Length: 520
Length: 106
Image 1 (cartoon, rainbow over the protein chains, first blue to last red):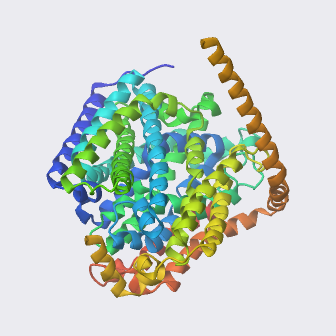
Image 2 (tube, rainbow over the protein chains, first blue to last red):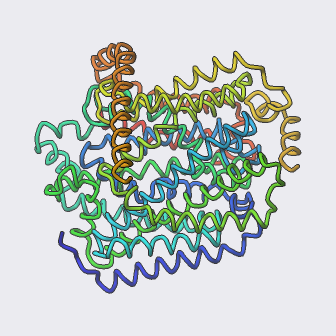
Image 3 (cartoon, each protein chain N blue to C red):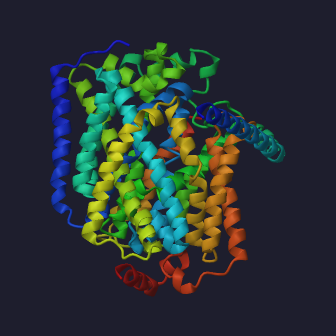
């Protein structure tokens, strides 16, 4: 592949950007004195910082590259992940789940599940998320090093990998969630400027929106659905409407926005409950613009870079940057992509470190009847974990991240456990009768059912039926939780105070009791 | 010794694959009669049904927050009382563009 050399202006822009991000992250170190500061920013975040941070951490470089690739292959239906897959789920998260997490004073979602069910549920849930986020760290690093930095800049992939790991690792290690959130705010602005700049130039080059539509529809019969958001149930592509509505809209997205530590951790750092909810809504609104600057350039690439082909579609956006943008703007756009990557990596790093400390080390020490770690020791272990994760995920980046159809790969990984996790979260909050055994059985058997559905051929019209896996494993887990809970002993009312819908929404006394329990 | 280990490993791998294929056959026999009729039914639905469900999710979410949830619960902790800090309004404003997108890309 031809590599376009960097203009000195590009190098200056990228250099200034990276150094600025690093300095901002290091500046935030002054606000980190204990584990609460490191993990939930001392509960002082305003709604706008939460919203910005959720958007940047969520979209990441995987969206810039993989959603654009999916749009190139499957059309605008790829945008469902930022529309159907965001706003309704963020509304449900904001008004159903977040108030409970925020009020209960927890650091992590598994910790909440541990209080509601039992320590086994907490440990298993945390372990699943730690493994998944570790894989995501590896994927994100490989994606940026290989598909972005190598394609756009011509850098050696392995050198790029370690540069990325070093910069993000240093500021996350030092500044914790405060650094992550405030660097995210800057990164969002850069991403939007770069993303909308690329969209404007791409549409200009194609000849406008109408020309884009007519040129793609003229490519052949297989492109006739490229401008439909909801495709027929029996489409051979991975995004049928039934899967999008039920699997994505009602399960995957809700589970992602309500049970994903990377997202929820930002709301746990809110200064008030209103900021936590408002941050979610504001983030959802900002996110609705993402497909415009991510999926549409992918569609433009179909006209402008037709030689790319479906198998190499994940290189669509990097190719567009390489071909279309002039010196200076190319540097800015690259900085935008780098921004997306850095925030995703730093967000995942901070969240994995939080869950590892709270839900894995904490539980193991509890089982071994050892005292919990001190605040200072917790901070040290969190930082050590951050360093270990960034180094080890860089080492394993190539074998884990070097995959075709990255977006489908990532979503399939999520679908193995998101349905069951949502089922136990949902029933845990709205149904006081759900018991610890019910939650444990629902989680374990639900994940097992997802594996069975994925590895049984011929059940669904699609080759990659991850949306249906998510929906049916959710339904199965719901049934298991209900049945096992009804067969086991009811949880004592004292344990449920402040953790279920009925006791949190209307009972101020429960709030007080919960606050006392958290502080003790 | 190495040769024996290699042979043992290849037998283990072979039997694992066979077991996996058997399990796939069994699960297919059990699950296909459940999923195939559902696929036939859903595949035969007209396209407008998809749009109704798609737009319906956004509308239902707006109705849930705006009508069913208590105002105090939705806005608990807000800095000052003003229509601009009412999260019910935020919900509707952030949902509306999506409704437009789903109606446009039909």
